[in-house]
Image 1 (cartoon, rainbow, N blue to C red):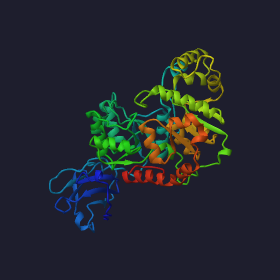
Image 2 (cartoon, rainbow, N blue to C red):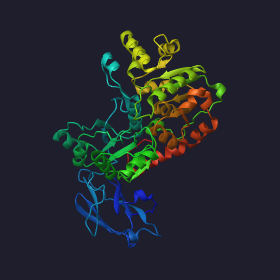
Image 3 (cartoon, rainbow, N blue to C red):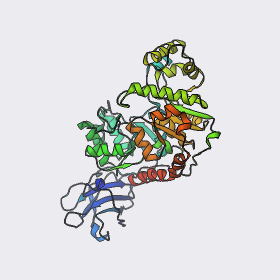
Image 4 (cartoon, one colour):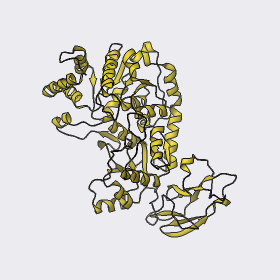
Length: 485
């Protein structure tokens, strides 16, 4: 056995003991000193049977108050080892993470995803669900969610993937999940807020004794404010927290939000979409401004007060920024799910006229004969329904700016410099976590891309990328997440 001692943040050391990760080869336990200065003895149980009693005090040297104990396991047939548990030898209380099936590294792994975002093909590629054109025009779907889902799949190591049913699962579904799958993951998205609906996810997870990993989830609010989660969400996140070493969040605001709601074991990791190429040695270009010709402007025209405090000023600033950038370079406006923009991209005449009426009504266009805006929409707009198409588009530009986190981050993942407009907590915290240059709305509106292009800030992004990559990879390792980073 080995017992390396590590120091942790106070929020992590809230339990006397906790299983951080478990495979069929070893179990790693986080142990905290008791108030009197001693270490609690641990009982390790395999498939409900006592295997060993571990005394951390004999293994941990120095005055550490928190330690990780790595306990090697015997070579057992994989069909036998169904559950690992750690208990306080004195009280019998089970540590969080107990009774879960350990990951069997020697076999191909099967994964369940909560809230997928699109159709998966070729193992780890995502496109939007096939639908008639009229449904594509009428439905709004967030392509950013699709990019995060695709990026997460590219990080994970698995052989088979299925969505976990949380609305109408049957007992047969739950039994199959428990017997045939190895782990569950929560796709990174804005899942930490007051209105999030988890349906029967808690019920399913309570019955399916598998590890659960959350990778890059985030809180959503238009400004930095306290978010009080409903009891159903608190219960969901507590189950996730008990099933992993730490919940991976986008940034400090998301970590603080979970902390205020009683979820302490949280780690800031950023977003999978910037690591989607799995290339730690990525070289992010920082060209001289004079060499920049083609700029991608990511649009987010639709936004309510959950995203921005003043939607009217937000729309006004975005229009001004779009036109300013368009006048400075060869600009392509990328749309990420808005219905009206799809009408132009798919060249449907009737849908386009309805779109123009909406643009005029909201003040996005000056009128139906707004020549500059019509020219942008007809000649310089890009949208997509397959993430691979955005990869190709991103690699064709010299700079990515705009309002979409997932218009900028996946471009950076291909070495393209990016600048993000900060208009809500989500974009601000991701920018801070990943060192993405972030600017106020007014800066891009008044000066265009040339006013916000700062080589020093972009060089900071380029120089910090490897460290950000290592942080995400280290998080996956500490949680025992099977990955390909």
